[in-house]
Length: 286
Image 1 (cartoon, rainbow, N blue to C red):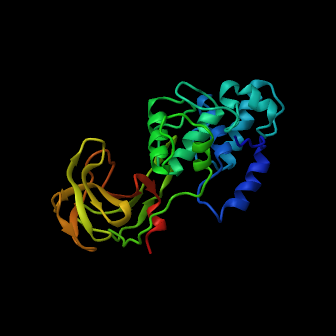
Image 2 (cartoon, one colour):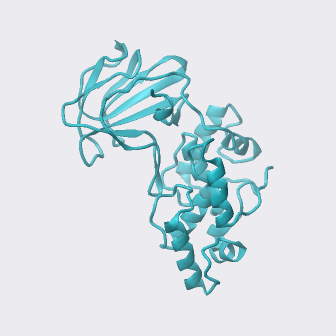
Image 3 (cartoon, one colour):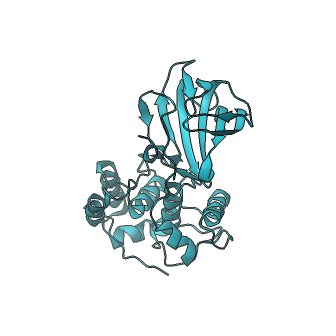
């Protein structure tokens, strides 16, 4: 099983700078630190794996409260003081339902970036985390048992999945929210600013798999299946203008923008899924 050395915060910052061109996500160790600090009520920024000023400030505040040397570095003493949320490192034990710790927070962060968010990143291996692990294992075609061992970890340490198909923009609105962490949760698509009634079009030809009201917070939703097991989702619509089973071409109007479901204002939430994994739509768009 792969074991990684514990990294201090300055080293993590350097690693992030070096890794930035290769992957859009932050560092899972920094994300686990942010989760541990959130548990202590000291950090309320995004669990994004980026060792920025808010993270360092929270580390210093924790060190001051714990009677440690205040240097803003999450070294061994700081990790020990964080208790069960400060250890162990991902890859040093098998993870299963009921586990709590730094490694579980790392797992949740990596699951989300690989397209299988598990709800709140809280360092606790609960029902939703196990369900996300199962979905990842099915995607990777490895043993499906909901337990995180070497094969599952190997999948999580690979490059992020991407859509094998190129897509067109479904709407011309300004990008307001990217794919990635939002608070302690994960935004599995992109948001585009819109006005009520703006036309939303299919990003590629395919067959409508779903069109109607969605009880999970998407409001009025259209989902289109494409080649190579790619699916696009268009959420928070004010009106749906296609029906399930209908074949559509790229550019066909499939609905009107709105603010239905869990939405604070008119916009289009657009997702791309490849074999069930949510992938960053911007990697498929021109």
